[in-house]
Length: 134
Image: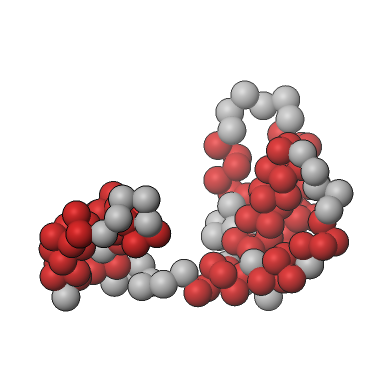
């Protein structure tokens, strides 16, 4: 069915106005064809992004509270923090305890050139202390 869809889009893209939304949708589909079908090759890849959307729902609902993030650097920092928090949740960690652990552990390694210690700080690491886990 997916192959039939892409064949249909490629056949019909020339039949819609080039400046229309349908054309842009068709064009997007064609340009993203190899990515849009990834879920067919890997059963671990979900067919939709509902889990990701649910995880940022709180942030989106509270966006009026984030008006102070008015710079690119502020937005990037916010994205990093939310990404860490949501990844911690996805790995059954307590975000507050995980952040606390990161903020106490990382300064202990500031003078090191070897950054391999970071592997042990990742949310899926078996080396994390038990108090960070739910």
